[in-house]
Image (cartoon, rainbow, N blue to C red; front, side, top):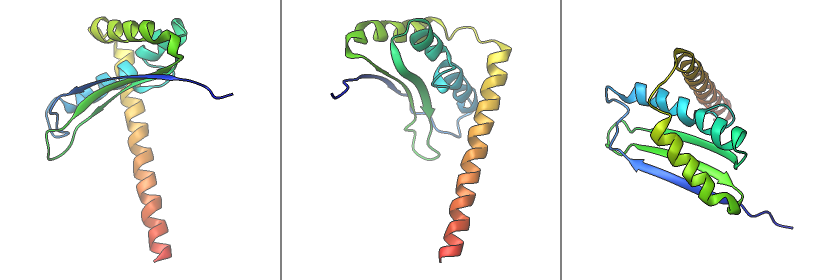
Length: 134
């Protein structure tokens, strides 16, 4: 039997570049709001507390040249939960982002550094594999 899932996506095209002065702060804010699929504000509320979603997260992107950045929030859920998921997502995005704790900021910094290290390792592995192949 096939499983049916609903997906909702909220996207804000913000014209952000990764060279903008506020980019690093917005990157951390996105990490706090929805960076961790299991341990972010969105996940805590929509997945863990309300039990409405299989996965929920947010992502912010910025480009170095074109002002084509975006904020994206995505949730995957059972279709019968669509109204409750959308309401909870909007509520969290509107209300819960106003106060951030120092603990959340420190965790977000730690998580972003881990992601950066992993990206560097993957790029290094690619370069090393490419050198041995070619």
